[in-house]
Length: 110
Image 1 (cartoon, rainbow, N blue to C red):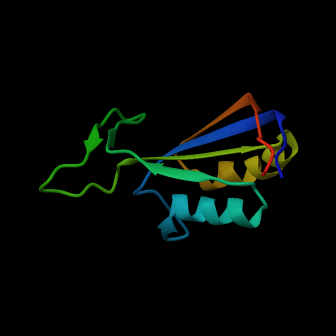
Image 2 (tube, one colour):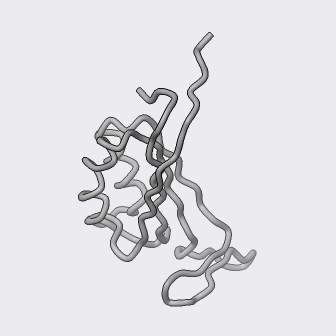
């Protein structure tokens, strides 16, 4: 359980078309984080974006793109982040992982 104070925010950037063992990478990562005891994670699907290959991908009414940007974020203790990062690096493929120190406030439960 996270408490008020210093923490680490991890953001993973990938494409919704990316696969890991024949399933979408984001679902594999979310499942891995859940079973690793991470406090919580959020997956956000973008409507447009581009990556290292500089190809713009976007949603159009007449087509559905499987290369839209996906962002996964979670905040955790440094120890838990250090424990899961090696596996995340294997799973992310051609994506990107951003790690930043942060401070959090966890309000008291009423």
